[in-house]
Length: 294
Figure 1: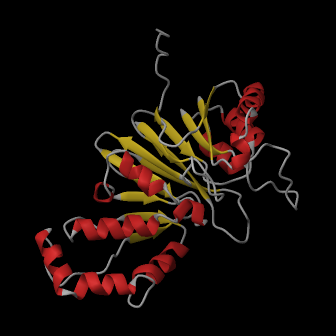
Figure 2: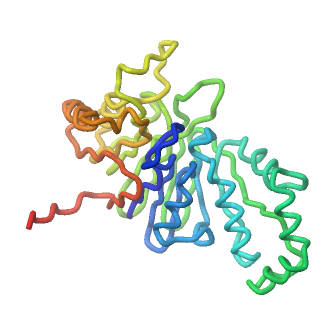
Figure 3: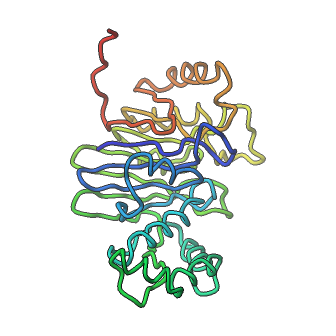
């Protein structure tokens, strides 16, 4: 298994970080978790195309986790020319309405789709790509997530748990991906909670939200619904994972000296391997031997 961090940023626009997105290669198959702004461009930089992706999971529907969904669906539909299966989308239930509003008759992209489906020139392009008229609209196959849901294929199993993030306003989930090689857990956005700790138990790698320097963001209520660096380290330690990948950063985390201070404090709480995520970082599930210096 190989993991590429497509986006390690957050809702705050950053020139050096796309919003959330993670590519997982399992043998000849690929999965994607989340697809925020800029994640699709980084997905293309890996050498893959939208038509190579068959299955995507969304942890929740904040825009920094799903804004490039429209680009992915449209590109896959247009370039696939009706020759590939519908995209399999596992997401909170509102994703169906979002998709309808984008791609259905008189939706947001109606002028584009009307032209591509009905104009003579676009029909010819479609046929040259192998398409057969009449052309259908994009129609991803959306499966709503729920707590304790399990999704399986011949090569992997994903277990879904609901986590804690803006309760009453957003529907948030975390994912545990199990393969013959080992276990990867992605927290999505969450504060520390029993479900994420339980889900991550004994995992080889935990990709966890690390939104702020702990103590600089004070929630209005008693429940912490997003994680800073100490919260991420606490979850990793409680779950007994081998590697913690910190991600979902704001510009605060890129200020000089902040990374070093955070990693030092995280290492006091969590004794496993800590990786400070960067866009396009490519990680094996398990540690490789450190190369010689020269």
